[in-house]
Image 1 (cartoon, rainbow, N blue to C red):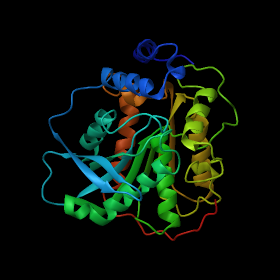
Image 2: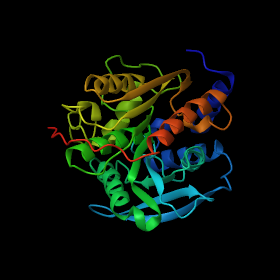
Image 3: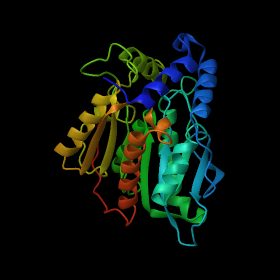
Length: 322
């Protein structure tokens, strides 16, 4: 599939920065190159967004998080987006995604809590999921002390972060947890294997590359049927929060977004699903120089802003096996 010129240049420069042997490098070196890539394609941090660091209590360890908020916000509590960064569960941090989370603050007027969940393979499932859900609980319980409105919460994330956002929404339903106004998922990976495997990397990864991330996240366990690890394994999708799913056309996990949207619709959950045909997985890196990527990101932020304008309706809890 043809890419737009600026996206083609982005893909070529990305290949140069990562190098041909990236997938065979030690995880520490992969993280170093990934962090450099994120910095290379970042925009200056905006002056109208305030950033602070927080520590959130987790089930096993304390969780570091970054809170981003508008600099001109008044005394009224802000709606909050709990954001989970991408990186295949093995890469990334609030710093690598600060450009996107700051832009999300600008476009929505909400606060964004970016969660530094534990990474695999050192911390396999359920560590990242446990941290993701703990951060959501912290916002609902302790958010008011930090100027956050616990009645207006959304979850969001890209790639593996979209997986964690969907998993947190499932857990909130099953455990009668916080009300969630919207789950905003940007090219999420939601299952272990695709129906139609992507054999060759054309800018959106491949099935082999995705499988390597899943194996690292699994840590030797079979997580394919656990919905908190792979949300499309859920037995029921009823009573979940409304969803906005932004897929990429050039992407190994494009199918995941389609399947999740279909499952939610079949369960009567309001869902918007859009697919940017000429954009690759990772287009979030290009929102400051690609008009098409910026438009897709704007659509996500518009949906979040609308959903957070008022508290969500209370949904009944449904127990899910898995």
